Amino acid sequence: MSDGGVTRTLVALHGNFASSRWWVDLLADPPSGWRVLAPDLPGFAGTPHTGGVSIESYADWVQEWLRAQGVTRPALLGHSLGGAVALEVAARDPQALAGLVLAASAPLSGLVTPEEHYPVLELLRTTPALLEASLGALFPSRLPANFADLLTDGANMAATHYSGNARALAGWQVEAARLAGLPTLVLGGELDALITPGLVRAQAAALGTAATVLPGRGHGFPQEDPAAFRALLEGFLDTLPAS
Image 1: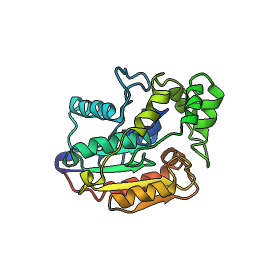
Image 2: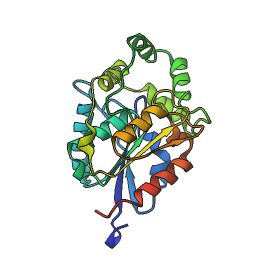
Image 3: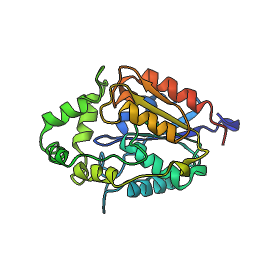
């Protein structure tokens, strides 16, 4: 905590089929010296969405949201799709951030979904059992205590986003050089079949840092093993110089 008791800000961005409720543990018990803010991105959990679906438009929204909140030089945490959004925001102005945490983040080169998978993505809109199985598979060691809430918010995603977010990730990329000098923590899960340990390590190498892969955990490791995630997060936040 800085002089005068001013608390620093960590902004947590959720992934696809998700919401701010994925960060319930951090919101309820923020790291010492930090406050945690977790917006619902456009088209998620009731946040209005208009126009096209793209990582760039999500980043535009986040930057405007930060201005509206009066937040300056936050640390930015992004999970999965939220990692791509965090990377896009960071690449536009690295000096505007204190640090970057990438948790099972989409790769710097984007993430291509095979064409044959798109009909399945659309089926998730109308098949609750399939959505429950798909989200449940993100947590191979245990379901989070608030899994029912996560499932509800996942089902309430905008209709445009089911295929749209996959197309957005396929059409987006960012150059690692644009993030030079920004302190970055790169994390992944050993059992993650979407953002595999190999992708996590390649991302870390491109950013000039080391990756930490949590053993026995999946894509949802921040919620699957919140204690281990918190320890890594707090260790990183403690290294960040005061703003």
